Image (cartoon, rainbow, N blue to C red; front, top):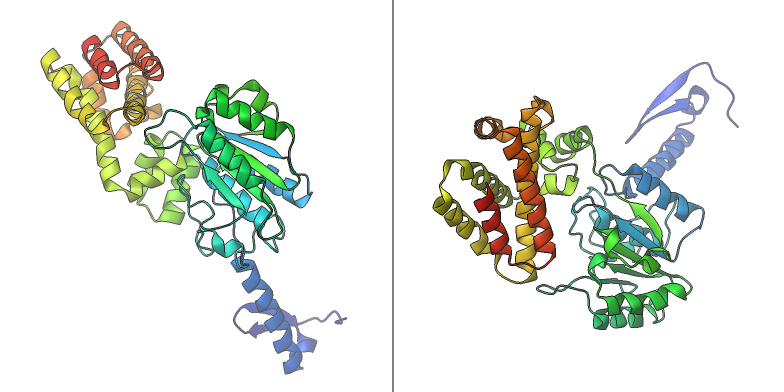
Length: 392
């Protein structure tokens, strides 16, 4: 026990540590205290933090579940794309598989953690996370390219792997991305596993539209909803963590509509951002073109989208952008320019609004929402865009 001294000594070691003056007289003891403190701080630095921007309620709930050893057998992460649902699922898996996690966080140093593609010194934030690397106790399935659904064959193989013994005598974790695209047969096959959960097996379903999942599947899981993140939170993250300029951070924070991973992609991928702006300009230029010009613009826009399910996804994203622009036009109609999503195109939006009355704007919004329904009903993506062009 140290006596309560009236003066303190500032240790000039690797870190500044305040040590009682009575200990300062004993150089060896002071050095030992500093060394121990520094070692503790170095260990703290190595700990990983949740790679999420916003949605603190998700972090608190999952961290609390780990600390209290109160884990569900099935989790359902749902919410809009680009919020970090897959990222959260991967990090949660890393915590559970870590050999020496503490305070609900992975150590980042054990053999299990090293199998995860995570830089322990830098928070990465990408929706397309590198899932578990070569970890033998983590399995991922997702909808295959050019396929509409996750097949029953995929689910059967997934269940088979989860039924095998753990490589590292730990949890077996399965992540199903695009879970809302499970075929009826696949969902029924999965349900049997959810109804009879195995010990130390956890399944995480990641979905955009929870309504597309069978109610029987939803009822078997712990549902966690990911919400869009506030403009200010994303803005601060881009500036502090990504060194984005203030003007660019403001722009990306607005057009991402509360989706941090999308804001990051705008910053990191210039081609992706330019393509986004191209889709904005096509819509705004419709009002300056005759019907032939509009159809030609649609032809150029639809050509890179290809065909099949991937084309439907691409055109769905185009419609999402156009719906955002129609919303901006309505906001400008009611003098709420401070709320618009595409402030970067304010001048062009004002020019477009001058050519449309309120009835035109409402009809345009209805046409775009109807187009979105057509896409989901498997109508030809190109025909859907042409219908929108004709209706303006």
